Length: 244
Image (cartoon, rainbow, N blue to C red):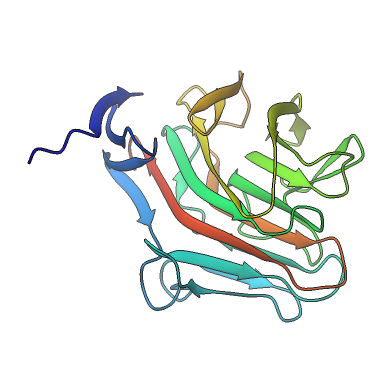
């Protein structure tokens, strides 16, 4: 029986194959790509990923259909954990990241997902945090989705940072719920226009959103906002670039 749910499309000069049922990219024909569905017995933090966490924070493979990685924070307020690929992508080469993530306690945590220019920030910090109505950006160059319990709502937001200059903050129409998976897609074009897509819907595009010729990493940051351990699940992370 023929497979009918796989669709091919050209995006920024790269041929992608997308599952029309789930809207996820299942493969791309690109010179450089990093795909991880976390189907192994453990998350490879020796060769494939960098991971750092304060106190008892950890990452491990989690039993789930199709494979998941689970980040668990330490049990103190502002304990953070950060997963990154290494600084292997270049903002002039046409970069794309797509990740499917679920935050299991949105009223007690904050997280980031996208591209950043550092594999990790100082203890108790993420690349971007958001309190009430103000963003604090610790990354000098980044393109990230984020949520934060310290904000007044659990809306999913996005923004970019270009050489320490923050873009406008864009708030999506999606409010995060516990354990709800969403697909986050960040595109950095070769002219440094940054575009954001949430569940395959376009959210924002930012002209000159990030500095040219800058090394960036795929980045997932997770931080506690209470005195108890919390978890975040990653179904997959897929990233690629037009050229090396």
